Image 1 (tube, helix red, strand yellow):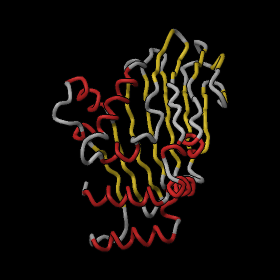
Image 2 (cartoon, one colour):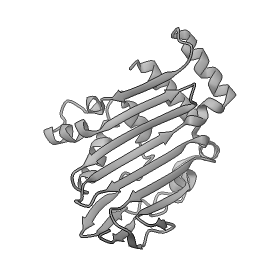
Image 3 (cartoon, rainbow, N blue to C red):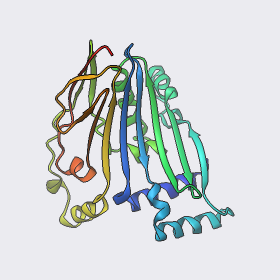
Length: 243
């Protein structure tokens, strides 16, 4: 995959943050294994005339008529040379995919991590964070860097899934000047964040604030600006039945 593609995607994504949908999904199987997934939907890029023009210009420079990309990305290559064998083993499990289709008006980046036990999500988050530290963070750089609640600690005790999130207690107005704060609010005005939990049995109890429960599914959604500005604690526990 040519580097200009990632550069274009990064620029367009940052330019269109107000239309972004950021989604986190945790699918838990009965044996404690499952899939942790992050999705970064920027399909709205293709319906914006200005952005469509930028993409068309970039494609012309490359001698192509339109953007049609469906590519798997090797995330393990973003690890530093001093990464441990365990870190590389976890990184090699990651299934990263970039889909950009001008004809379908589809723009989606996804990172899928299959885990054997819930605690491996915590290890994955640490490895994912390290990927952002090196040069050319690529896809991890776009989707990491504080854009997800990646300081969470997941645990499973019987049929109770718990997510603990430490209180960051950081006031953005104390660290950002007025101009930067105003620009950030404008950029993220309509961006959204959602977390979806898929459980192996019907949910019996859930104490996550603002969560919507529907059978075996729990959804927590909020404006992305609220997530980074007010820093609500999205942690809590979900207890589910056997079936």
